[in-house]
Length: 133
Image (tube, rainbow, N blue to C red):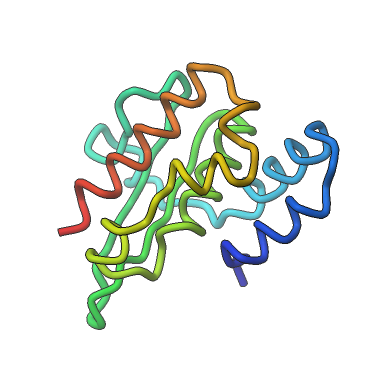
């Protein structure tokens, strides 16, 4: 079972060193289930990311969104896992109301990402918010 955003927040709070936090994010990415081969298309590719990122969103019968994703870079794949934990299972209204940038600041991530990775992370969030209608 995937970790919840609260589990991830607690785990990151426990890790003081950013090298350990990066390793943790990489492990989160490695735990993502693989996407079907047909998911690696231009339609699912997130523009604005230095690495290749693919996100899939499917609305469930209950009105929540199931989100899956992948990246070709280990740390970015961890960021994909973080974004999935933050948004997957939420309704369109809850996705729109989620302050992702505030969460990234809260856990200290914004201060420890390169500008390219921060831009890519913002692109992932923007894609999810735009597709949640």
